[in-house]
Length: 318
Length: 294
Image (cartoon, rainbow over all chains, first blue to last red; front, side, top):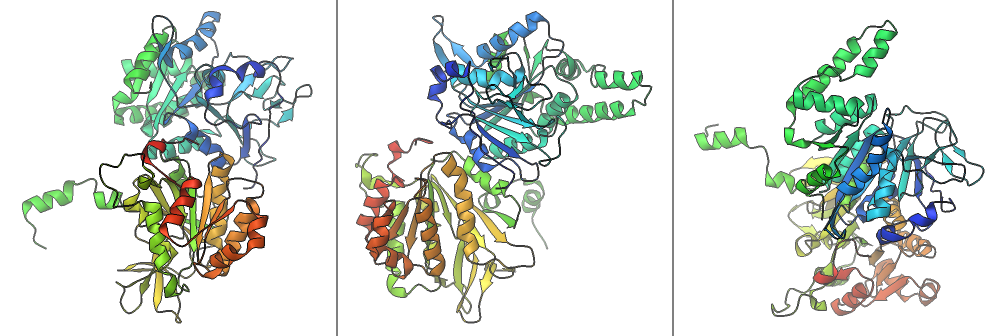
């Protein structure tokens, strides 16, 4: 296997120590050295050793959490993790878990770090690690390499963004960084076809699949419609703004005015032709017209119970 | 061609066919390419255990054929277990997991219905006997392919009374070729199997190579696994004593066995084979075979 390397990040300090206790200890497979890390190219695909982490999940299911948090109010930011924590486990009146999701959760895999190397839980890409800690899900990620990588000097954390605070979330079970080659960067959507292939293979092998989307721009829109065109259910989080809300407006109300709106505004501002946006909207309309509408669920960011109900109805809680 | 209405309707409206869905998938891998669709077999909800079976084929002497049946019975369980015997009785133990084998069958040139026995007849037999096994063939394209009414021929020689086809009974097949125009050598099968085993080994699945009879290629595979097993517990070996060929020779080589504690030996009978397969976790009783327990 070329262009791949397995690097242990077990020395990452700070919050990692608190993560190793609790539900995460029940995860059936974890590399004892730390978060298993591979660097791969789209041509070779995700390495088998990475992909087999998914089979260690107790429940044969995989959910991609996609999108972002741009424009979130402080209230919306504060609601995000409770939304996922509340939606992935059913509890009785005493607070004991009665059913929960035990499959794979994967995302873009980046995390913001402070000067002590502690990782924050303030982005959607932290959701897998948070759910791993809370419920023992298998947490994985695929991240396009959009900048040269660096090892942060104080703790050695792997920096994958332009700023030192953008790290790979080492609290996960396995992370894959995708690159064109050792010397060539990718766009932010570079990992999308690869992760859809991965989900498709798991689906063929009997895994339940799903994509939960919040917020997001052009890439998230591609992920929403890409999932639907592959028959992968989409759980869209209402009130999370941008392309996810635009999708809900289009899907539920037939109003396509917000789809591709940011891109359109940029083109107009630059005095450019907006035909590309018209084409994108037309393609999205074509996809929605052809899908089984039961693939789509709409939940509210401020209502974890709405996610819980959808997870339950889709047989994702065991 | 005349058909009645119902036949015509069936012919035009059917969207699935059980014969098609139950047929093995075939993936052709050229050198340097990945084989993600074949490797996706390992995503199946099957117990995490990889059994690699290797040994003699065309050159196996008939006096060693009997052991192939022993191996089938050892892996496939005892059909004569009385109904009242509890589910967890070890007599019910059978193979569950992923089985990698050579993926071929030898059939007669003169009479294609005649099957020549070899190690690759053992594992397809498990498909019926072991419902929780996934039988995966890795085939070297040792000759240019020919599609025939008797199967896809992957190798033939003027010196042999048989041709080698892709075995029709398996779940999925990976056909190896350097390029579309070049032929693979027989070693490529075991080398690719070792590549494939790398991912399960890294994920701490258990593995086992079982070797019966065989020649030079089998000897190189046994040596490779014995060497790998010094560093990684995945690579355990079970040699069948008195199976002839190189597996039999290794099984008698006490120096070799002393140097490799992860190389095990069983006698060429069902009882001894089953005892070792149980000890090494290759066969399990149904209650013990909870998926993904390691």
